[in-house]
Image (cartoon, rainbow, N blue to C red):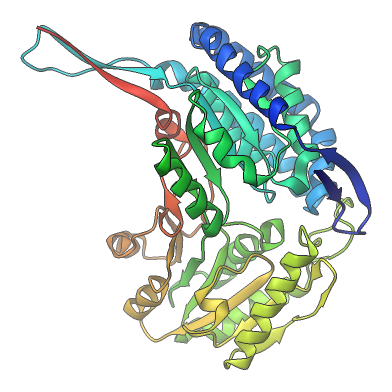
Amino acid sequence: MQFKSVNPYNGEELASYSSLTETELLGKIEQSEKAYSNWKETSLQKRCTLIQKVASILTENAHEYAEMITLEMGKPISESLAEVKKCAWVCEYYAENAQAFLSDTIIKTDASKSFVTHSPIGTVLAIMPWNFPFWQVFRFAAPTLLAGNTALLKHASNVFGSAEMIEDIFIKAGVPAGVFQNLIVHHDTTETILAHNSVQAVSLTGSERAGSAVAALAGKHIKKSLLELGGSNAFIVWEDADIDAAVNTALVARMLNCGQSCIAAKRFILLDGIYDEFVTKFTEGIRTMKSGNPLMKDTQVGPLARVDLADELQKQVKESIQKGAKLLLGGGQKDAYHEPTILGDVTPGMPAFDEETFGPLAAMIRARSIDEAFDLANKSKFGLGLTVCTRDIERALSYANRVPDGAYFINELVKSDPRLPFGGTKKSGYGRELSLDGILEFVNRMTIYVK
């Protein structure tokens, strides 16, 4: 099978990739198993040194990697550079903290000695998406490899160029052969990989549909799974908020990566008293954003990653308007480019409210009270995160228990940070990445007891 990488900005083919044969795939899995037997015995200090080297290579070649990201999925080059730098940060963070995270945990019992150790589990399969083609991989790989596991990457087929570069980074850093391998395969091979005795777990970032399918396979073969899926984050603005600051935060929260982010703010729930002011200022902010060639430094809005993604967003826009939403800005589409679009008076029952909108579409929703705002926010099958904008921090904190999501941000967009655990609830998945939680997802926490 052939896979084509296509520049979404101009439709030009970038490269073509041939899928692995069944024999080649099994060979790579077996190589991963052999590499694991040595990698798990490699000192943690040595592993940390190698991951620090990975961080250095990312930093030194940031422009080269950023250009590949932009060419393959259309992200503005300034954002691609920021993504690569964040990958270096997560590598540095885990290299600096792995020793503390993986140290024995002493627990006092009636034993003369009792504690918990942390040991690797084997090979872990990573199924990763195209929207952050470097970041999603490195936030998985840094802790997973430092814990002593080996990794197999099944990346999205439209960013195989990025996937090959990532594997090359580990090779250049001196990470032993077989410890991190990229697999050029179709998703139909997932069960073959998961069923293999050496593969002990799977980490997937992607759609709800993909997560459900992979979780079912993991359950069938009794392998651990971690899922980071879709989201429809609410962005609640109270009447006492600094509206200008809230708008500036909202613009980034919705438009970063052209809106193609699971944790992007998608539903703007605005108290009646500030609805008109917020919408007016947000609309003006969107108008000033420059669309164009994502390789240009001043471009802020590029195309979506594929034409079918723009088609799907256009369908959601039209259906929402048919159900009563007001088109306040944009609404047009040409090939993979979709105009930044704002819909007003969005209510439950419209695609812009009920579904994940993966692109530059902002849904403006009215709320008569703070309580109603939180009720609206919770009317979602997703649960990644929520933002509240207000000057009353203590009151905002008191509402945190009203939110079932994995994150609650006050006066800031929901974002991932290597120092904080990241993950969702409900249809947004389960498990946690990053921070201490991220490195403990794929280890055996063994209890040791001495009478």
